[in-house]
Image (cartoon, rainbow, N blue to C red; front, top):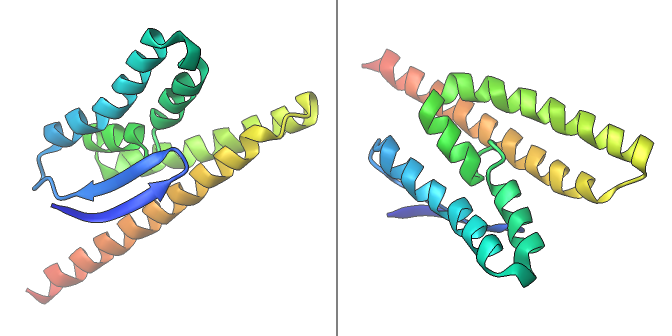
Length: 138
């Protein structure tokens, strides 16, 4: 069952209860980027658009598909450290693009990605704190 649906600029994100089946979530999360890549290779007139969607979706930040895959492979604690490093990397890339190339378009995409990443990190922290409190009460 889907318990939350988010409409993102790069697609729709449905949060589904996989009952802790990490492999199922990895397979389903992989389907979107793989499909975008196939469409990019097959439909040459939409190559750039689908390649862009593929690249954005494999960025390893949840709720993007790359984030779902990486989070299930590594676990939440290691994943959160990697996400923070990716956020710093995105900020550095933005600074370089703005200062040296006067290119501002990537700023909007990356700031949005950073925002959703921070929201997910906060949600995970709250979930861990609630779980910890519930374990203490038992």
